[in-house]
Image (cartoon, rainbow, N blue to C red):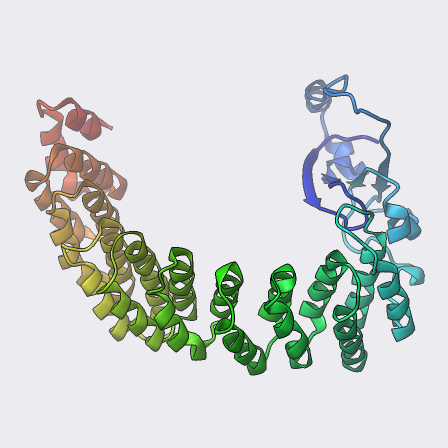
Length: 435
């Protein structure tokens, strides 16, 4: 194999073996066309760069599958059977050498319509699977679900099979995998079984994985019901799922939970409200902000900014701007003020220059630095003049940063103040001006 250009990357974990499959993507420099254009000097440079000996010795012999397909010679094909789940586990790495486009075009490699009997057989095979064991049967089951996904009637029948499977005595590891398949083809018909599993610590996470991805209001209702029945990390998981699903109807329950005595629960509820990003969610966060302190307040502030950003992108700029103005008050934490200023710039444009200048005049170094960056994002001589006017009023570190910002702008209006700074007795200021 002529390997003139390669970029090794671990692309995926093949589910049929317990090791990472290393796929080496060899670029078109391996083609006959490029080899004809490569000079002798370039070839020698590349060959010298390739180690003559292996850097590390493997603990045992390894098998490398090389797929060598010349893009200008469509006659050369690789046997597709080598990539089937029962064969791929026999190699340790795959080298895709100059392969582009469709790798396999033979009829055997095309998906065949799966049968429900095949599913029954596969479920029986995986029922004893445990973590750490070979995953060949799981791969086949995943392939079956993938092939069935385009056939709704078959998916509904398969869903019933998976629901029954989750009620069986199969191992937890295999049920975990079954839940992942339900996340792909499941409907609200799976709600009852998955909701029951939510309340059991051993199956709560796997059930949530499926519920989080299955569409339908019925799923949200089940999650809200179970939220009131459970505590601990399982409840936190349900809170996270409600946030991920952006369930607006969950806001009243989450509003109460942001004041929960358990800090993890309160933080999860705040984050969920930020993801839901409705006006009632923003109101709930604003209410909590006036009552909480310390770590919980910081969680509320982060969620408020996340919520505000999403709402602003959905057309609620007026309501969000009021929140930004509140968060920019001098009594608010620095990071909250910086986030608010950033939001005001995105909504109001140059109208945000006034609050930015006010923040620039503060004694908070981080706030000053953020203000300079945001002011510098506005183009034009008008803003350059404004920045120049601020230099005498700033501390030395802020003046240095502002000079650097002026240099980035490349505006000749700033030249006089830069020349003046070159004569400053402060070394940092002179260095910034000369740079």
